[in-house]
Length: 237
Image (cartoon, rainbow, N blue to C red; front, side, top):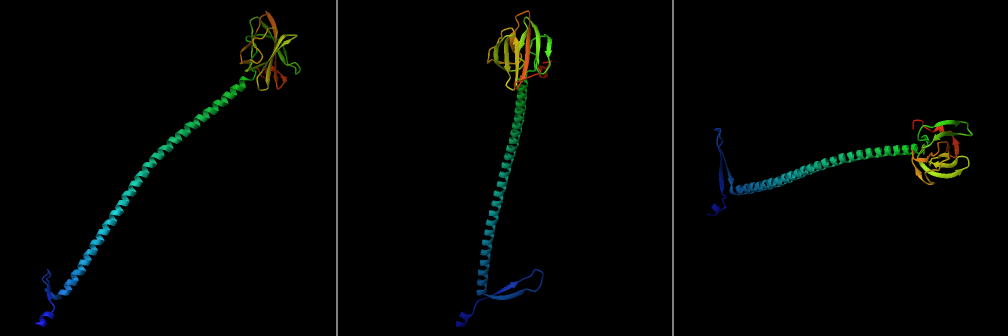
């Protein structure tokens, strides 16, 4: 009876091939089956854990790829916005440069016109007048005009009336200061129609001749020295 208890259970395993070969059989103990089942269970559990972890890793990787794609998309959108902003700033810079250049040119033109406006280049009489004597020598550089009633005596450039004084020979002496070293002087019998300190522009009337015939003496100075008026007068202006 004890022998039967000590005898371990054994199982016969048959391997039947599908190619008509001889059937193989072998015997395994119950303990082996238990051990093999345990090992198989451990392997299956390990495999299940590996698959679960692999799936989690793959999911994490896919999530990171998706996040990376979203970041790339966001960066691309920001790049488009920045590029549009850069183009807008370039257009603004171009417009500003055009404006600056135009302002600079305008300023230069205004300065040029102001400079030209302050040079006594015009004739001092408002209509054709005879010039019986033109003193061209260095000691007496002036022009004398024979003018008649109603002739307007004009400012030859933009400036300020610096002096109005009596003159024993001509009657009145009037001097204009153009603020750039140039001055012009008028000597005439008739009373001036402006006052000292007045601002005048080229072509403004300084005198109106009231006698039938009289003489206007006209001089030009530069830095205090008398110069030849014809050196600056433009006959067409």
